[in-house]
Length: 172
Image (cartoon, rainbow, N blue to C red):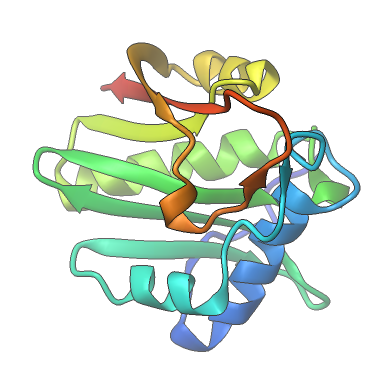
C-alpha cells in the first residue's frame, strides 16, 4: 500500500464525534483484526471523552482525513517524563496494510521531537495477544504491570470474566 498520500494532521475539536465513531468501529465493530466484540460489549469511547482528551495541555489527537471518513486516529499526551499513547485506531478497511505502523512511527517522532520524551506508555487488554504482538513488533515491551479491567472508565463491559489491562512501554 502506498502510504505517501496519507497525511497525519492535528485533529480539530469538531472532529471529536468522528474520532469517537472511528475508535468504536475499530474496537467494537464487526470487521477488522482489532475488534474486541468477542470479549467486550458497548462503546469504547464517546464524543465527550475525546473532546476532554483534546483539551488537555501537552496532548494531541492526530488524524488521517479521507473524503468519506477518517482513515486513522491516535492520541499522544505528555505526562511527566513519558508520552501516553491511546485511542489508536485504523479504519477496518485499511487494516493490515502498514498504515498503523506508519501512524505510530509518525506520532512517536512528533512526541520525541516536540514533546521531548524518550519513553512511550500505553495499555492494552491482556487477552489480546495479537494486539500485544503488533506493539512488540513496533518496539514496545511488556512491563509486567497488569490491572483489572477498568470498568470505572466506561470503556465497555466485559463479556468474559477475568479481563485485565497490561501496560507496554517503549524507550527511544
